[in-house]
Every structure is written in structure tokens, then in C-alpha cells.
Image (cartoon, rainbow, N blue to C red; front, side):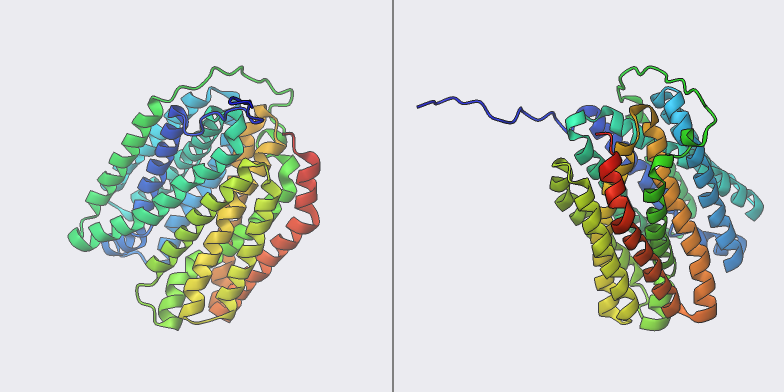
Length: 401
């Protein structure tokens, strides 16, 4: 009888090592500071500068456009220069821009500050997530990428509620701007202590080729991601006003997004086992199926039950789908293009969200909310079909690890 026996599986490397934990916390701080402002900027622009809805939309859209442009180049920069240096420079600029909100005395100046703030936000999010991948042990990378997104979800669930509470209590926007800067500063200081391994600079033979800025091997994956983001763009932008005007829900959008966040968190935790076992395509498949059901419920059940049930279902779907897709992009790319792979999925999401916000508004204005939400479901269906007919097989055939 053997008292001691060898385990068939070697002991696993630590997932929550010191460096990964620091980068995870820093990402929480980035999105916490970002989301503090997001729900209140329309109110601030209206109260402080008397801006109308069109002007508010234009000011907020400028930030998204500049973040998208920054992300197109950030992957190349992160792959070509020391990643920690790129991260700390962009994070410092992201933090300092919060002073501009307090200092801006005119609508034009505020719009300029807000628009330009999108550039360091785009660079910082790509650089931080790429450093997170670098500091993960290779045996836990797939799982770690899935858990990394929890920091976004938790920040997005908590931060807007805190911002609204401060506004209702004090009616002082400067407190919110300074708090955002303070939180971002803490994140920056945490990232300063991260230790990254020295990395040889990779010289590309064609430094200005498209593949240095966008992972062309993941084009099919990116196009389906655009479809999924389109649906979320339509729903997330018009859900509050739809709930108020059609369903008589005065302050229900807070609960709606809380349910989306709960769904995201639960599915990321539950789906982590599949990612740990390398079942990336399975996780993505589950996510796209559940999301499709969620958008169908939202469009087809126009009452409060459908409204809140759809929130939870869409959160559950996206929580499985997004980390799986992020792993797909990274597993299709060589190590020298890790930053490009990371920025590519964010670019695809931004493009889809932007188109969804713009076209969703046009459809809602001319044909009503019902048509807008059915169009969101139809585009989601196109992404669903693209995944099953092309993406699943393409990824399985072309993954590098």
C-alpha cells in the first residue's frame, strides 16, 4: 500500500500573483474613475452650460471617437515599446485630464477636454490589459483573462451609484471630478509598483502594415463582435428613456444595469472553469446563444418583467461571450502581437457600440423604440450566425496555443 503517490497533475502556478493582482486593481480604478463621470455628464452639461440633447450627444461622442482612434494605434505602440513605460505615460495623462473638467469654464473648452481625454483612456486600457496578460503564468492565462474583466464589471456596477448619491447629496460636480482624479491616482501608483519581465523589442519587417494595427487573422471574429456590440449600443443608450416613456419606470435604469452587472459577474465566475480547461469556443458558443435569447426577450416582452429579465440574461450572455472572444484574439496572435490582438477586440466593440448608438437613434426617432430593439436583435442574430457558420471553425483551425 502506497501512502504517498504522485499526482497526475503538476501543482498549478498562482493565478493571483502580486503583479496580476496589482494590474487588476489598477484596472478597477481606471473604470471606477471613468464611470463616476459617465452617468452625470449629460446633467452637468445641461445645468452648467445649458447644452441641449444634440450638443450633449456630440460632446460625449467625441470621447468615444478619440478612444477608438487611440486604440487603433495603441496595440502597435504597446508591441513596439516597453509596455510598462507606455502604460505609465498614458495613465499619468489619463489622471491629469480630470483637472481639465474642473478648470473648463466654457462649453467649448469642456468639449475639447472631454474629447481629448479619450486618447489616454484608449491607450491606458489597452496597455494595462496587455501588461496583465504578460504577468499571468502561461498555464493560467486563459482563466486570468476571463477574471480580469471582472474589474470592469465591478467598477461599472458600483461607481455610477456612488456618483449619483454624491450628486443628489451635494449637487457639487467638482467633488466628483476630484474624486475621479484621486481614484485614478491610486491606480497609477499601484501600476508603478508592477514588475514586468524585460522583453526583447520585436522589429517588424513591415512596421506600417495593417496587421501591426489590427489583427487581420481575427477579421471574422471582429465582424461578429461588431454585431454583438451594436445590439448592446442600441439597448444601453435608449433603455432608460424607453423604460420611462413606455413602461413608466422612473428610476429603473439603475436596477437594469445592476442586473446586467450581476449577470456579467456570475457568468464570468461560472465560465472560468471552462476557460481554465481551454474550452474557449464552448464558452463563446454559450455566450452568443444566451445573449440572443436576452435581446429577444427585451424586444418581444415589452413590460417590466421582460425589461428586467432581459437585463440579467444579456449580462449572463455577455459575461460568457466577451472573455472567450478576448482569448480567441490572443490565441490567434503570436506573442509579438499581443497588444495588437488586445486592441483589436476593443476596436471592434467600440465600432459596434458607436454604430448602434447612432443608427439606433435614427430608427427609434423614425420608427419607434420597438423597431430599434428588434433591429438590435436582428443584428445580434447576424453575429450569432456568423459565429456558428464561420468563427467557431476558423478559431479551432487557426489558434496558435
